[in-house]
Length: 414
Image (cartoon, rainbow, N blue to C red; front, side, top):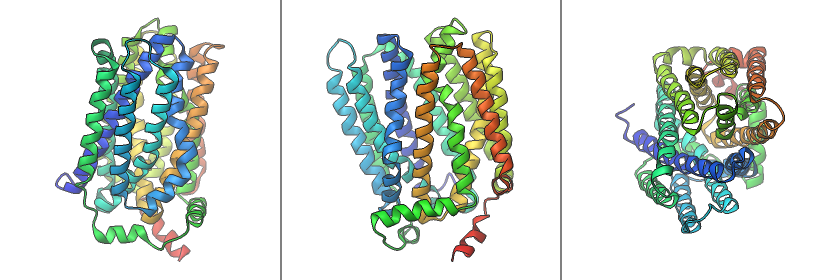
């Protein structure tokens, strides 16, 4: 797989864009929190990032399935480059950061990612052999978590040593590198033909995508599960973890950074661990998803009981591996069972529903933190994770799913 140049180009695009957008977002979040002292206003960065996925998700899926996905990557990275360039104009002064204006920039970056993320995920099965899907997703997820961990660790240090405008200039360079690398990707002609399929009108394509997802025995329950799962995910926003650190643990921003770094370190180890259990992920992805969902609930409850920063760091780390293995299993299961010509719409719909619930949950829990102990919010999240695991356990098709299950489904549809 590592000798596959086309996959390596895609991996580099994915890695660089992840670093660029996370670094920019982290430094903005810390700046707004320090400037306003408001958890809710800091959580506004999360809203700015998730709202576009809800509004644009269905249209993005249709366009990703309709046009060459390589071109989608290039155009969206150029759009984000321009948006960060506009942000630099906002940040020219030495005064306070214009919060409303920065929210708009973040929303624009997220809108571009609504198209970019389904395109790059949908490209994986076109560039990688079926038997290497789990390895490819593990490799990409591990790289993503490394970039996010770097963003949280380096971002907190950068914001203390250089100006936000200089950080934005570095982000512009990263997006330029990603766009240039995407131009080097060559998708096999026969794979492009499979994706293109027959031409439908925009609305017919949109409706057929929803119909396909609704009838699919794996994609439907998996999407429902992931949507429900993003309710407890709302407790893991940067603003709420920062509030937990300061209110429950009497820590500071650096202690918050240690916890986030611990979590992403666990995610990295879990992503690499998925390579070790590659065969199991192919044979029992549904069972692994169920077990890891329940484990997330137990570890969240343990995190809520932390009495010191270092206990919280340990539990944040322990939370990471099962979450990473579950993510690899879910992405690989979709890529291995959904038709390539429908994959963009399935991914975009999944992103829309997940982000809608995550945005609501993040705002709700941030608001709730002003009225109830922050520990109880994390206890609530742990219980919700357990309920998600029970849902997956109750769905036989998902629980007993295998990577090649859709072969029978395709025959049934034809």
